[in-house]
Image (cartoon, rainbow, N blue to C red; front, side):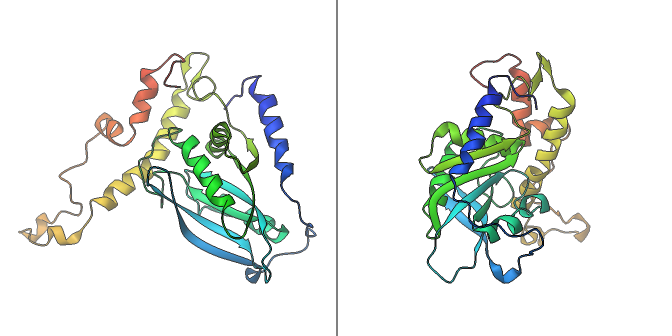
Length: 261
């Protein structure tokens, strides 16, 4: 996604502020952390201001003292368990960081309705402040990640959570109209459609899981008519797009930079 000229200096300054975090002694390139060096907590809930549970995996140093550590936070719509999200953990935690990877609202393990960008300011603020208050946190929270994971940082920074020490976004944008959804006034068709299809996959999976209960179909006779899912039929084509990816149609309805963006 293309950044505007004004956005680049802003990102540079904010990324530099990540140095406010405490940098403990670094490991040599040859040292590999063992599993006993890291305490892992899966699916730790955090309740947002409007009562939605967002779930995160927390990786922290296995310390025998009551030492507190700076936090590195990643908020992603692409599944907190994927290898590219988890791999930095094994460099960061042995260097004295707590790493938190959270599924954003409406994605994978987290509750709520998914709509790109809509909740990232409030949810980002709430998550930063929650992370800062954890018993093993020293109160300083930094954020990392690229693309949409970079956008979650920008949105959190706009909300100005008091304990956000710095962000390091890359390959992202601060304008989600020009340079993301549109390019010079033209709809970015391939990117928008491809991204929507990728995002909609998890939304569809969640819809299926919410409407799947074998007990509902038990009385059905003849047995050949057993319904594998508990809704009559999925809408097809554009109807399904409107149902599980309404944001795509909203993008088309707002070709100009207006209050929507």
